[in-house]
Image (cartoon, rainbow, N blue to C red):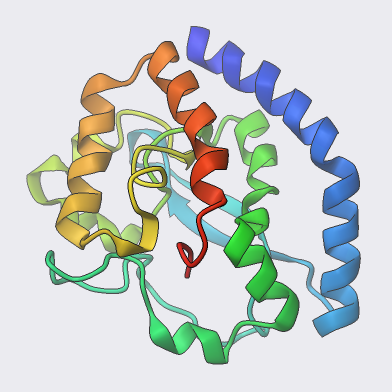
Length: 196
C-alpha cells in the first residue's frame, strides 16, 4: 500500500515535470518519421496479468517485431542486445534509446497501476518460460520503469544474471530499496553505450 501511494505521488510529480519534454519528444518523432508517436505492446504484469505498455516509438512502424523481449535464450549471452536493431531505429529513436527517454510514457502506466516506478523489467508473455519454476515469483510485484537490472549493467548483463536480479528484487524489495534504486538510475543513464 505504501509503495502504491509512493508510486502515485512521485509518478504524478514526474509526469507533470516531464510533460513539456514529452511534448517536444513527440514533435521530433512526428517530424522525423511521422506517426504513430507511441509504441504499445502487451507485457506481463502483477499476478501474471497482461497490460498495455506505452513507450515512445523508436523504430520504423511495423518493423523488427519480436515475440520476446529477451534477445536470447542462452543464459550466458547478453539478455537484451540485438545488433540488427540499429538498422530499424530512427534518427530520433537512437537518441531516445541512448537516454532512455523512450520510457517516459510508462509514467502513465504507473499512474494506471500497471507498473511501479521500480520493479523487474516488464517482459512479453513469451519470456516467462525462461523463468522456469520462478515465473510465479517474478509476477508477485509490479514491473518497473527502472530496477535492479537497469542499474546493474543493462544490455551488458547475461540473461541468467538479468533473471537472477529480477528474482532478487522480488525477495528484497521495500520502499527504501526502491528509493535507493531510483537515485542510482540517473547516474547509470549517464554512462555511454549502455542501451540497445
